[in-house]
Amino acid sequence: MAQAVRRITAAQVDTDAAKELVAILRADSRFYREDAAAFKALLATALGESEQIFELPDEGQLTAIVKSWTGDDKARARIVDQAVGGYSKQTVFFDCIAGNGAVEHLVMRRDLPFAEGRSSVIDEYAVLKAVFQTKVPVAEPLYLERNPAVLQTPFLISRRVPGRLMGNSLGLKEKPDFQPPEALGTLLAQLHTIDVSTLALPGFSDVPFDLHTQRLRIEQWIDIYRANADLPAAALEIGLAWLLENSHLIAGERALVHGDVGYHNILFHQGKVAALVDWELVRVGNPAEDLAYVGFCMDAPAEFIDCYVAAGGRRPTEGAMTYCQVFGNVRNALYGVVGMRQFNDGRHDDVSMLPIILHSYWAYMGALDEYLGRILETRGFRWAEPVTEFRG
Image (cartoon, rainbow, N blue to C red; front, side, top):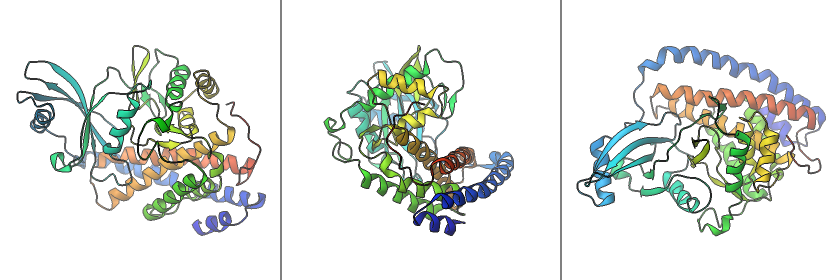
């Protein structure tokens, strides 16, 4: 199957070849669906047998950190909670009680030891410092520890923002006390209208975003996929080839892109966005990457885009939105592939992480399979039609 896909996509793909790709896609989809059912049965019996993947810092360790950081020898730390979800960072909520009794509510965000290929809090901290000076609501970054000897891996500390998450990456889990299209449209317009060149951020302000940059990124993804996949999957084989071939669809527009905007990464307080959190995927790219990702969890994506434009954002093209919908599904499915490889290779043994890892793979592979098939059936392999604006 993999050789057939690579042979077809390497050639000048015509209508008949696109139909052949659709047939391969449909035939292969049943295999990962069968795997999903089998793994779900295994997970039901294995979840109670796992060990903690990465122990929480204890209050003694946190107290030593806040004493060193603040210079207050009488300060102490009190752990409040740990965030649930995610598998490349550890998030711990704690209070810092100063010697004079004053209490600060803080958050520690810490690199995990096995999160190869994901950004470090060192990079995240620099971006947060810059973005905090803009209109984009983020938690104030206070302290960065680069030295892994202090707590095994680097970590950052931010001020805790009042608010709570209202759902997950797939949508809301409760009735909101805000208008989702307006709230998220305004938030992303604030982010995307930042002039990246004024942020003085090495690796962001000084990098281009063009066809070569995007093609290079997809080529890196292909290498990651080849190195980590146990068995080839048609949806990823075709999806990666399609992204490489159609990179022209998002080249030319440059903005600061969060990369993981959704109800799982936005704190809401009293009907307003309090903070956009989890900046590990931030990069310079086409703003449609964020818009398409948010569109997955919107009941009215066209209204969301209209709100985004009304708040100052630029209306995306249909081609850019289509590209970024494929892009988001491929990326998240790849995280599942890499996560399973890490587990199978013994780099961690926390079975409780597997539902998160496998959910990413199954959910996004299913969406990718359906979406790619529709694109190939209606437009062929290469998107070459005139530029049109996205209307939903």
